[in-house]
Image (cartoon, rainbow, N blue to C red; front, side, top):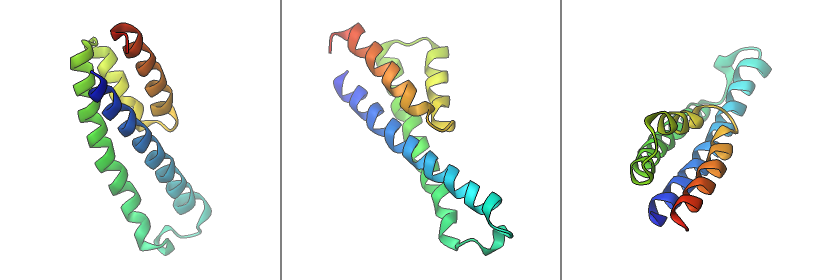
Length: 105
């Protein structure tokens, strides 16, 4: 259980941080620039990296959800937390507290 919780926590933070970077990239590209085609090409990879980490986050969340015997709704909401800025940090804190309490970690 400790390993699953640790993996989930790490991926929740990485996913949350990359989502914030992606949000900044979207704001810069579509709100601050006059023409989004003038944005640096490397900004394309920000979304790609977030997507990779989000997929890993999903796997780790489902793994923890199975081991902690979460209800499917709890697992689904926790999975969706990686798509809304700052929410992965909130859910990581809530789920960590719940799992530590339930399993005496």
